[in-house]
Amino acid sequence: MQHTLSVLVENKSGVLARVAGLFSGRGFNIQSLTVCQTEDEAMSRMTIVVNGDDAVLEQVSKQLNKLIDVIKVHDLHPNTFVETQLILVNVNCSSKERSEILQIVDIFNGKIVDVTSKSIIFEATGSGEKIESLVNLLSPFGIREMARTGSVALHKGLQ
Image 1 (cartoon, helix red, strand yellow):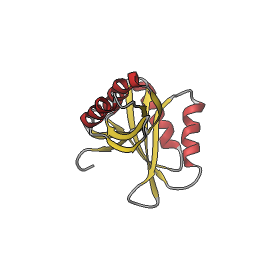
Image 2 (image 1 turned 90 degrees about the vertical axis):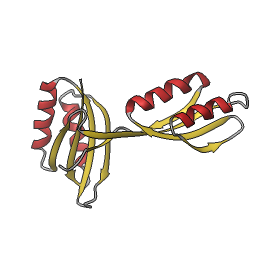
Image 3 (image 1 turned 135 degrees about the vertical axis):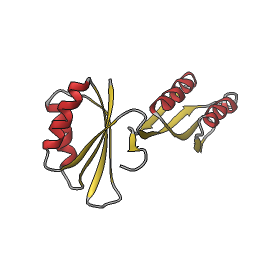
Image 4 (image 1 turned 90 degrees about the horizontal axis):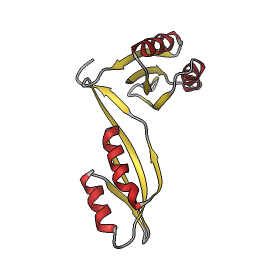
C-alpha cells in the first residue's frame, strides 16, 4: 500500500540527510521525496511517498517524530489531499509524427518548451497516474530523456 507523508521540518542543513538516513537505516524504501521551503522561511515541507502496510507507516511516523528537526508528521489519507507531479520530456519527433505528438501533449495540457527538427521537449503536471499515462503514450515515439519530480501534496481545506 502506498502512503503519502507531509513532514514539516526545520529549514536547516543536514535535515534531509537525517531523514533519508532514518529510512535507509531501517530498510524502508522511499518511492519519492520532494523538499522545499514553506511560507515560513524557518520551515521546509517534505512530501515522502513510501510503500508498506500500516505497521510500516506507524514505524516510519514514530521514527520521524523522534528526530529533533521534525516539527510535524501528517499521513495524508486518500481523498483528503491534493497531489501533483511535474515532468519534462524530450521525445523523438519526425515531421510525420509531430502533429500526433502535439495532440497527445495537448490532451494532457502540456506546454511545449523547445522544438527542433528531430525532437520536442515539453512539460506537464498532474497526478502520478496521469504522468504515467502520458509516458506510456509517448514511449512508442522514443523518449530521449525525461526528468520527473516526486509528488508534492497539501491537505484539502483547513487543517
